Image 1 (cartoon, rainbow, N blue to C red):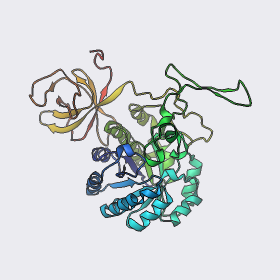
Image 2 (cartoon, rainbow, N blue to C red; image 1 turned 135 degrees about the horizontal axis):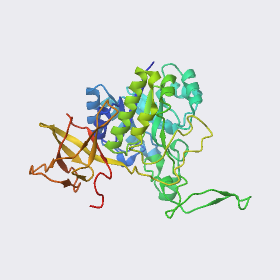
Image 3 (cartoon, one colour; image 1 turned 120 degrees about the vertical axis):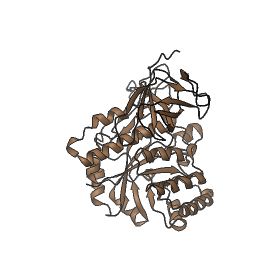
Amino acid sequence: MKKPELLAPAGSFEKAKTAFLYGADAVYMGTAKLSLRSRVDVQDDELARTIKYAHSINKKVYAALNIYARDDMYDEVIKQAKLLNELKVDGIIASDGGVIETLKEYAPDVDIHISTQTNVVGYNSCKFWYKNGAKRIVLARELNKKEIDAIMKNKPEDLEIEIFIHGAICYSYSGRCHLSDFLASRCGNLGDCAQSCRWAYNMYIEEKNKPGNLMPVEQDENGTYILSSKDLCLIKELPEIIEMGVDSLKIEGRLKTEYYLATVINTYRNAINDYIKSPKDYDYTKYLKELEKTKTRGLTTFYFNDKNNKDFQEYEGKQYNPDYEFGGKILKAEKEGKAIIEIRNRLQLDDILEILIPDKLEPSIFKIEEMWDVETNEKIDHVNPGREGQKVVLKIPISTKEGWILRRKKGSYNEEN
C-alpha cells in the first residue's frame, strides 16, 4: 500500500514550520504577485528561506503561480520562473497555458503541477497535460470517487494525481468565478477574490415562467448565505482514497491560522499513518472529533460519494466553533515545567488548555494554575493579547517543544469578566 503525500497550505515561513512540525510532507505557498491568494503573497526572500528549511528536513515546497495572466504580466512571470528555478522549488502550480509554456522555457528544472483551476475531470485531459510537460495533476474538486478511480487506472503511469481532502469549497466550478470581479472589482482569477459568495444577501428566487414557484431561501435578520458552501471533509473516505493510490492529499487554507493548520494536519497525519498500519482498525469518528474543534462552517463530502448530493450549502453563513479557540504557541520550553507562550487570545487562571502534540491525536489537557509576567517574573492571574507577540510564562505539566500549539477551551472562565 502506497502512503500518499500530505500536502498543507502555508501563508508564511512560520506557518510552513508549523505544517512540517505537525506532519505535512510538503507545503504550497504563493509567489510574490502571481498566485490566487494575493492577500498572503510570500515575498521572494521568505519563499527562499522556506525552501531552504524544507530541504534541510527532507520536506518539499510547491509554489503557486496559478493566475490567468494578462499579456502585460509576462515580464513578472518570466522573472518568477527564473527565480523559482534558481531556488530549486520542488514544483510550480500553474493553470494558464501561456504561463505553463513560459515555465517550460524559464524553469526547465522544476516539475509542473496543473492547478485545480484548469478543471481536469478525466484521464484524457490528464494525458494532454502529461504530453505538455505536467508532472502532476490537481484534479477538479467536483469529481466523485468513481471518476477519480477511473483516472487513476487510465492515466500515464508516472503522472502524479493530487486531490483536495479538506477545506473551503468555491461556489463556482473549481474556483473559476467572476462574482467577486462583478460585485467588488476584485478578480478571483488574478488572486484578489473578495469571497462574495460568503456575503449575506436579501433575496428570493422565482422562476419566470412559473409564478409562485419559489426556490426556498432560508434567512435570518442578517439575510441569507445561499451562495456560501460548507467545508470539504473526507476523513471518513480516507481509506478509499488511499486504496485508489492517489499520490497527494491536499488541505486548503493559506489564510488559516497556525492553530487550524496544526489541528487539521496532525489529524490527517495520524489518520493516514493509522490506516497504513492497520486498515481494519480505522475509525474515522475519533479523527472527526478533532477536526470539528476547528471548523468554521459545516462539513460536507461534496460530490465524492454522490453526484446528486445537495448537502453542501452553508445557509447560516460562518459558524465559528463555539467551544475552542487558538490559545497560544510555545516559543521556548524552560526548566521546572514552565514554557514561554506567545498568546493569541485572553488567558486566565483556571482556563482549560489543550496541548497539540505532533504525531499524537489526543491532546494533553491541563488547567492553568500558575502564570508569570515574562518581563518581571511576577505572578499574574490573566493576560490579554494587547500587542502583537504578547508573551506569558505558564506552568506546563508535560515536556514541550518550541512551536507546539495550545488550544483554549471556551467557557473555562466567566467570559463576561
